[in-house]
Amino acid sequence: MVTPMAHEPGPRTPSTGLRPETIAVKAGRPSGGGQPLNVPIVAASTFTSARALGAGRHPDEEDGREYARDDGTQTWQALEEAVGALEGGIGVAFSSGMAAISAILDSVPTGARIVAPDDLYQGAARVLAEGVDRLGWQVKRLPTDATAQWLDHVPGADLIWLESPSNPLLEVADVPTICAAASAAGAVSVVDNTFATPLLQQPLALGATFSVHSATKFIGGHSDLMAGIVVTNDSRALAAVHERRLLGGAVPGALEAFLALRGLRTLPVRLERGQQTALELAQRLQAHRSVTRVRYPGLVDHPGHELALATLAGPGSMLSFELTGSATGTDVRLSRLKVITPATSLGGVETTIERRAKLAGQEHIPETLCRMSVGCEHVEDLWADIEQALGGSVA
Ligand SMILES: *Cc1c(COP(=O)(O)O)cnc(C)c1O
Image (cartoon, rainbow, N blue to C red; front, side):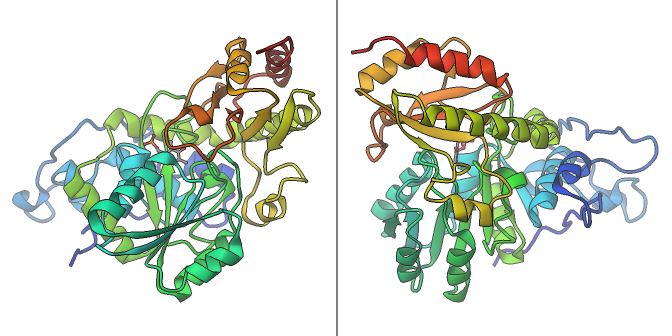
């Protein structure tokens, strides 16, 4: 049996009554006179043992840290506190989003019954497929938005995995209804909250056991780090995830944790700008002659629009669209872009675009579907770039 961490971090900044934009700025800062405003990059594997010095003799004694992989560092803790405060739980930071996802899935026993979406981040899908082969997991994959089917399959399941909005189809799940059913069935529920971010969706408040993020994306926000974070308010779940980090060893880097927290400070303004631009671009793309379909939860005719209004504080800055013509024609068009960067990642200040079906394991994705992560550039520069790329003839 795993015991929770001896020194549970208590939030240093009271977050009750504050709005998310304010919590993103204030949470996870050192307190007290003479302290730096920002938590330092603590480059430490080991800490002077307060135990060996004897009670009351060491100024940092209440901290009780001995070894970073066991006890964390002040830098990780600050990031964990800030994301935890935004999502109403306690965070555990990892070296990447996949490390965070694996920390949850590594505790899933042999023969477990798992329900997961069809449209699922391909790394998570591969871990599930491995579990089927190695551990006899029974994995049922369902359309994200087919709530009735989820409710049929949740009773008897051990783990429910959700991703909402989903990558890259931007489907919206009925997170509260499915998590309530999971809870009634005694199943653990997980929401990959990477696309929504802690600002737009609080999975724990919607009933999930775990929220998980690739902090590489929107939280970091500048495409310059890899990190992940798990958030939960269930003490057993928290203990299990801490134990996975301790034994799996997928700890965040000191610089990465610092940069992820620095990125989080501006997430509200980046997201506000990205969302505004994404909505404008989605509407203009819908009217473009070369575009056959736009998927963006902020559009009133998006099938998940009502659910998005109910579960998300905003539609986010990810959108996907499909073009007329072939996959090759789409690649030609994307190759003409000059402002928008062709790149696989997302959530940065720069707008990135990718034809997703070119990736292995993405056979369910329409072949001309382009996933776009809308950044902070001027909307008219982005639109002019898209127009010139889509215009002209292609094969
Ligand atoms: C990128 C991503 C991940 C994986 O995160 P890494 O930081 O790349 O390991 C997981 N889920 C979603 C939705 C993602 O976009």
